[in-house]
Image (tube, rainbow, N blue to C red):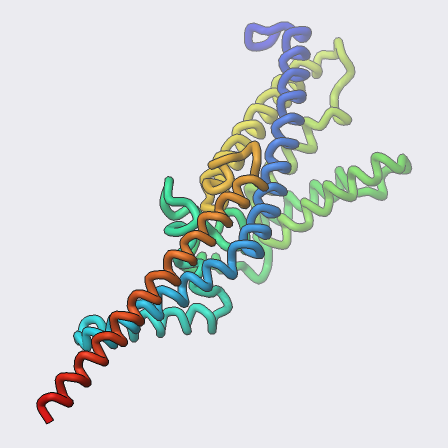
Amino acid sequence: MHGGMTEQELEQQVRAAEAELLDLEVAVETLRVELANFAREHHQRLGPLYEQLDELDVLAAELIAARTQNPEDLERARLARELLRQGMDDGKGGRHRRRGRHARPEPAGAGSGGAGPGAGPGDAPARTARRRVRPTKEAQRLYRELARRAHPDLTQDPAEKERREEFIQRVNDAYARGDIDLLRRLAEEWAIHPDSAPAPGTPERVGWLTSRLAWLSRRLGELRAEQDRLRASPIGQLLMLDPGDPDGLLDRLHEQLVAQVAERLAYLRQLRAELQAGSVESAGGRHRRA
């Protein structure tokens, strides 16, 4: 008995948690792939329409300024043109500033570019933590211990050798970043991996099962948090409008943008007609005075 549970009860809970972990890992990885694909298609299919809307809005501001000659309208048109030019120069395009406004009127601000599911428009660059030139003593200790226990050359079995190579690559990446917390988690993960399990019925089995169950619970919590983060990202919020039919969602967004472009073009024609009529009227007045 350990913590009120028998070895058999612990075995059942560990098996259930392992099955849940597998399902959740597949779900999270699938969501990552869907978000990446959706962001790419969103950028390729809708990006040109966003750019066209930006240009049409700037043209409208310029026509209004030309008609009114109001200093505020003139300044507004100048700033709109400058912002659009800056957006094009930095390679992002005005569409990144407009996406939440045109692509999805329901929840605002859900459109990111294709750079990645977690990035939002106008986000400031993340501040990069300063990296030590030499890993800390603790990082060196953890790395040495993990390399000693998990090195691929310590086994001749091809499948086990491949597993160790994948694991030690994660260790190398964590060591290169000086990520002590991740190195500690990897050490714990290796210690409670099924291949390291004591035989059933041995005195060490219950303690190992308890440790593995605790690790599985933490890992499930991490994956649920990652799933929530992906869904809450700008492109994730957009996808969640219709997660069952992302292609149909893109079709509907495309139709909305095409309609908005048509509305802007009609508005521009109206503004041009008004400007032309005003010019004719002004010219007529000057002619009569002359």
